[in-house]
Length: 282
Image (cartoon, rainbow, N blue to C red; front, side, top):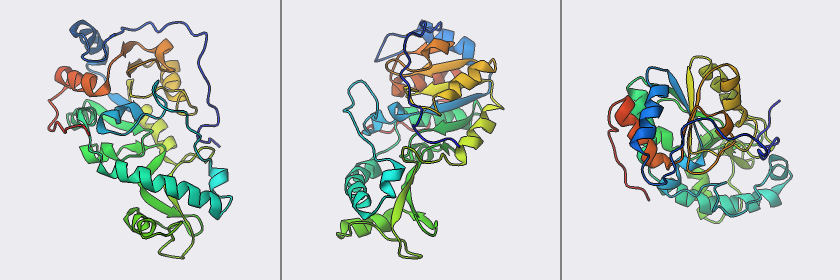
């Protein structure tokens, strides 16, 4: 069984990626976008997204170069007892307040526009912020779950987070299930936890695409980092749009070293209609 984050590896000693590089953190160069168009045009695409896509919405990147070192709570620790759960919820409640205010940015809207035009066949995301849905993506596969919902550790009851947030705001150390009264867990995949059915759905989605485009993800943690490797091994091109190096650079057919909020709307201008929205980043 696959578990989240258990096979984390740093890629070292790899040869440089063979694709086109855009060394601009502001606007991708026209020449490189033209090269990307040659690779992307006329192919059914699937997007794999990560935390870098949401930084323009005010949500910090988890593993970016400027990110602080974090020690996330594991699933084993969370289920060990009330003390660990109280510590988790105290921290999570503060983070949720920021995430709940976040709005989709031009990168999210660009992917939704590509999907609406039929160019993009689906979105597979590691993000738990719900911004793909808010931007209009029809059915993003959320590999790590969503912070917008909670689930009961005992009876499995699942609900929107609002009631749990209200309990915490009122001083409860741990939110309780409305169905059975047991302790709740956020509906996200913690480190060491079994991956949800969305991971199998993602593999089925990839079977119908000709190209995978990885957006705003460093691709450093397995098993998600194996997704572009699988596509490449099956003969499919892999595109990368990210500000900074990634674990898939050595297999990328085209590589745009740029912010997703800049590069993805530019690609929409080449591959499909302009995004319907241009939300202001927080």
